[in-house]
Every structure is written in C-alpha cells, then in structure tokens.
Length: 274
Length: 255
Image (cartoon, rainbow over all chains, first blue to last red; front, side, top):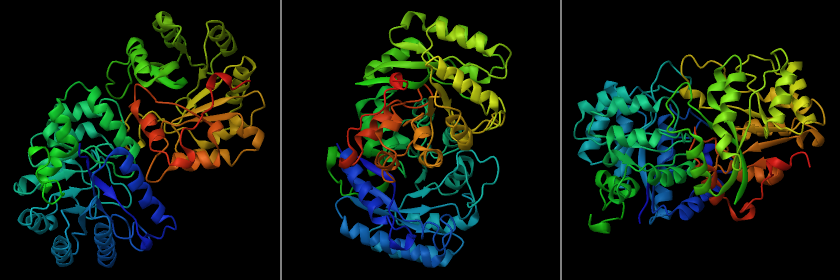
C-alpha cells in the first residue's frame, strides 16, 4: 500500500553540516524500510547556517529550492517538493512558487517568517490556489507567548487564514512537533480546508485518538518531519485506536494526500481506483 | 522478547487525560509489545507532597499482577524517616525506587539525594530518574518543575560505587553530557532508557550505540504517557551496523 510522507526535509552542502549527505541517505534508508513511496520535502533556506531557519534570506530560499529541485530530479520516483518561501519578500516568494512549480513542486512551504494570519500571506495563498498547490504551514500548537527564532503561529491563526482562502488546501504542520496539540484540534475543527499532519517527535498517547475524534480521518495526513521512528510508531498506533476503518487508515497513509496534492502529481494516478 | 521495561507508570496524569492507565491494560500492552515485565511507578505520586499514600495505592493496584508488574515507589530523602520507608519498600518487593528532584526543588548536588542513591544501592535497588514526562513546549502553566538536570545525574553517578541509576526520557545531548562527564567506573553506574532518543534521519540512537554502547542503554516506553510502538520502531529503523542491539537488563545492574 502506498505511503506518502507530507512533511519531510532534506539537507544540502550549504546547510553547513558535514554530515548532510548521511542525513539524507538515512531518510531514504528509513523510508525504504517503512514503505514510504513518496517523500514530499522542503529545504528551509540554509537551515540556519547563513540566515535563520525560520527567517531565511531570499538568496538562501532560492539556494534551498534549487537543491530540492535537484534532489527531486535525482530521486524522481520517490521525492516531490514544496517551494519554500519567505512572505516578507512578496515578489521573490511569488517568483519562487512559479519557478518551482514549473520544475515540478507540488506544494508551498511556509515556515514561521510571518504570523499565519498576516496579510502578507494572502498573495501567496491565492497563487497556491490558482496552481493547486497545498500550503504546509509550520505551526506551534497553541502559542501562549513568543519564542525565540520564529514568528510562531498556532491553529487559531491558521484557521483565520484558511477562512480567507477557502479554495486553498492548508496542512497544519506536526501535531507532535511541540505545544498543546489539543488546542489545535479545537481550533481547526470547523475549518474544512485544513488538514493535520501527524509528524513530530511527540508520541503522546491520546494524541491520535483526539485528532481522529476532532477532525475525522479524512483530514489527517501522514508525516515524519525530523523523527521518522515516531512516524512509524504512529502508523502502528493508528490501528490500536479502534476508531478507524481500513479505508480510513488508507486515507491517512496516502489517500488524503493524493486528494489534496493530486494523485497525478504524486505519481499515484489510478492507484486504488482513485 | 524484551525482559524489563523500567519506565512505565499507572494512574492518571495531572496535566492531561491519559487513556486507561490501568494495570490490566498495561499487561495487555506488554503482551502486544512482547515485553515480559515492567517496573511500575504511580503517576499521581509525582505531584504529591507525601508519597506514602500513593506508594500504598501502587502496591494495592499491582497486587493481582505480581508476576508481570513490580512496584517502583517514590522515596523522598527530605522527609523524616525516609530510610524506614525505603526498608518497607524493599520488603514489599519493590524492584526500584523513583525520585523526582526537580519537583522537590532539590539542587543537583543535594547531599540527601546522594544519600538516597547510595541507600538504594545498598539494598540492590536501582534509582529511577525521569528527565521529563512531557515535551517542555506543551507544559501546563502550573507545571513549573522543569526537566531533570544533567548535573543532577552526574552528581548521583559520582555518589559512590554502590549507586545504580536508570535515567528515563533523556535525549542524545543530555546522555552525552552526562556520560562523557563521568569516569569509566562512574559511567557503569548509569543506564539510559531509549524512549526519548531520536531515530532517523538524525540517527541519534544509532550514534549512541556506536559511542556509549548497547550496555549503557535499556528498553523503555514511558507508557502510558507515550506510544509503546515508538522504541520498537526506533530499533526497527536502525542501520545495519547497529541492528538488533542487546540492551542492558535492568534487573542485573548489580551483578
């Protein structure tokens, strides 16, 4: 059965880490063991080496997207990409979306360079809708104060943005990525164009049950972010919730991703009759 | 088959609802995960001033499951007659003792903690410490204890040859900071559960297996707070050169 990881990252030489190629190889190795058939990935600028991860400079955004385009070309059967953009540079962001979409990008990645409900995100989300590109938005589950190094947004902020852009698909990033995920479930339960990705290092018992109960299986997508073992654990734990049919599990593994990204773009057209 | 998981609890957690944290459910989970036995703490006691009633409740709840579940009661070394409480715990069959230095606001070099570690060791009881029960980014506003400090673990490992520590829910940086800050003899007094060590793509578990070695690690799940599937998944995704590790057996730390 296909398995789509909607929240993956790769590194490249300009990230300033000597082990960047080993980390990329580890993702592909673990992905093969897990049965991931499609990694939808992004590179956030230089990941802090020459500009901050969540506030990447335009030059780093372009370099990261270039590196991601090259990885997609090399791993064409298993890797797709998001165009990463920094909404503080509107023209550059729109240009990167067009350039990367032409190169095969299937979505847009927004880090935390601007709060999710900021008006600067509007032109980006409008273009994403036009190009049928879902927006994966970095989220801090229930922002209660400012944290250093990022303009953190939470589910409430993203819900406001999603309401302004009903034709755009949004993915609320990593419910296991830190913060009060229970707040996020309530914040987006009434926002039908927001999906939840289950990635993140957090593996709290009750998290998956809460997500299923609050938004339903058809709005949950599989992801790993930077801890693939927690992704595999969650896949297995989904069965133990007792809340999902076989079809629901299939939807979380890949069906929902195929629906919002387009099965054709993920190389999955016709699989499972979808 | 895993021998002992020393990291688990029963009972409700103060800051979020935990689904059915009951001993009979734990035994079913152990069967599913192919784990023979567990050393079990009582979650409510973490936030109690006097741990005695919680310890008694833990013993009562575990009684029907003695062959699979052994108690890991809490002893506060800043409470009067704690040695007596420790003797009682030992005579009632405790497999280990738990302590919560951050919750008790005890400094890393508090001599009472060191006395506790040595007193546990003299009774062949490991001292179980937990770095965190939840990710720091999701803590309830009233949950102000903070994570256990690496300095506390170093101090306890240096207390004396009799101490044996099981440290749960530590990440790679924490483990390395303690391990490489100890002499080889002191390092052998500490084992680390793998429940909070990252897997691929960063491969923290693989790196620790290559550096500090499998003998310094034990299997742990942090049930009922965390998914028991996580450590098993982590092992399954290890690269070939460290595949199928043989972890330390918590019940043989004094052998």
